[in-house]
Image (cartoon, rainbow, N blue to C red; front, side):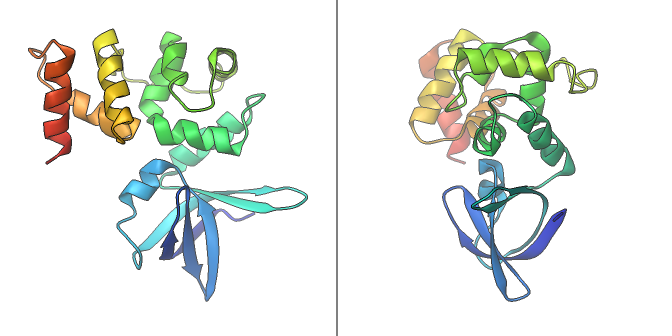
Length: 192
């Protein structure tokens, strides 16, 4: 019904933006990556949207790319995954990492998303395996080693998003093997 929204950011909330469109402020729930990239109040933006209509509410969900929107809609098709959980998945995992985890059947990666336990992760893997185009998934997306998983846990515990932590890990030299070295280098990268 509402395929996209263009306007000015009026307010930034914990999990949503209020976008001014023709004199009306529209609340759009967005993934964390959109909140991080919005650039502040007063900025213009365009989002691809999905409207969810319920008895007591209308909720609009917005995404930077059409691919993110399609992935959100596919996640909604999984039994037990509602819009809040689908948004949490897209806030925590990049589309590439999600597809890679599904291709490699790495349920532990999905379990890093708040609100997703082992059974839900397995259900998502099972139901999305045939619905996503996994042939385009880069085999260069690395598996998360135990050391890197610990580094991600430490960084997210310090308040960084999983996306930021994963980006920092990609810039750490392979020579750094210990958790302490990797955390220190990741923090240096994130502090730039």
